[in-house]
Length: 144
Picture 1: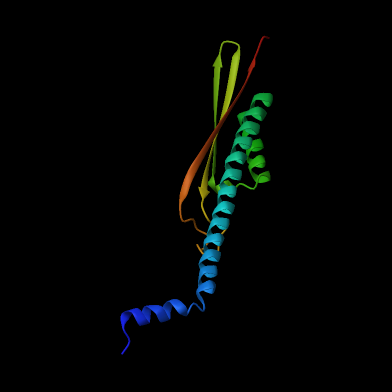
Picture 2: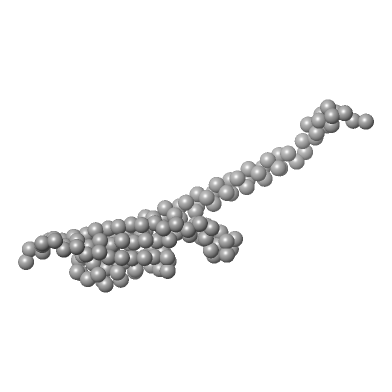
């Protein structure tokens, strides 16, 4: 009959497969960390790109004096920066005080986490959605 100490000693001596199990757990952890970093890089890229969309839309509206032209420029910039138009909201605000004119472009983009890194796993849907906002204001003085 085996005692507890004999069983424990036999288990400690038999370490076959322990390294493979440790490697498997380490590999899984590294894959999760890598895919998390890739997902975070997509989020940072989208945040940076909506800032550029807001800036270009406000600038175009300011230069041309047309909100519609600014909206079209913002939408074409969003396409250029690979932002999905159905998750994008672009609003303009115009302020006129005396000879000073300001145009503000407010861009909101709904970010879907893991929809780019795991599209098949999540069925093209997101596990967690959140909105990112950006504003840009351009102005000019009319002295005519």
